[in-house]
Image (tube, rainbow, N blue to C red):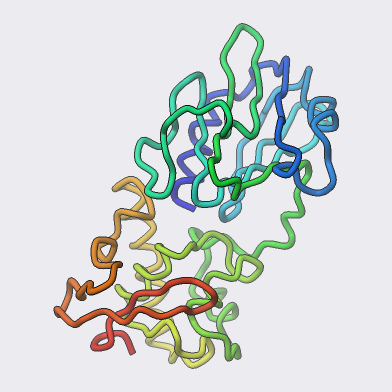
Length: 258
């Protein structure tokens, strides 16, 4: 989510530039049944006129009655504009500019291009993606709305927070950091939070996003260096629990996260 916000700001620098060509060499990377010809027909001759983000989805609106381009990056996708990567340090991605990793390229009149590189092919490209399938954005969700997202759910707290249809934007690293800061066990039922715990979670959600965004991304959390076998809690020195919750490897402190 934090990286995608950086990509949104980078893509904004290309607004208004005429699109003269599109490359989409990886058919698997195109979602929703679209083809490379479909994307080229939809974009060439138009320009991006507005940039938005919903959770981990970057949205670029096009001129006239053109479609909205949706870009997903997964853990390893990197956005490059005019030869410059928008993020300098992405933990799970390489900044080697291997042409084989280029999944999508938009060429602009007068030179320059917007490129999406993804070595592990975890992202994707869509036209007019269904934004309604996503929950409220984690960066702007209010405390009451967060309570509705979690309320009544027996799902593990971490799994509920990472369910993009319920709350858009939180990935594995951000969620572990958030729950560690909030002192909440990621395995407890999401609907079990008391009002004071919910307020604490919401307060830390805003602070965590602000602080890690300023530092440079999801991998810059205070817990990050300890997320390994034998890692200890930076707060109280306890050996961290390592579990699989919601299908994701999870690190938490058995002492202060309850």
